[in-house]
Image 1 (cartoon, one colour):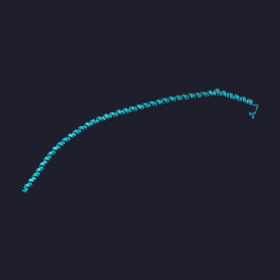
Image 2 (tube, rainbow, N blue to C red):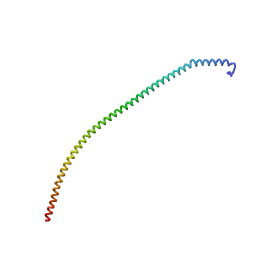
Image 3 (cartoon, rainbow, N blue to C red):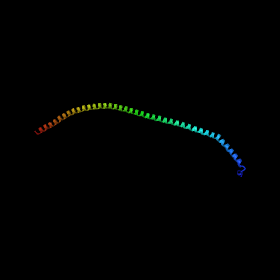
Length: 153
């Protein structure tokens, strides 16, 4: 086997060191700077993307905060409008109630006056009817008694 032949060790060692040196120089001065540039560019792009994402995240947080503020403001406005509407309805209902109450009082008063008049007329008529009935009864009773007294005589 030629690789174990001692005559060739020195030549193989020379070429091995030469190839290793060439590959080392190529790697350190050519390939590593290329890789370093790629890594640097990637790191810069990642940092830039992270800063953009952070800015967008902050903007989204600000928009959410503004949105929540507007929602809160809208709810307060809604509550105020509902309260004002409720008060307006209460005032209107009280006004309508007072109008109806006045109308009902007038109608009740008119009805009571009519009932008094009817009562008075009924009482007068009943007095007259009672008087007429009393006269008729007395006449019939007295008339029968007279007839009975005449018949007995």
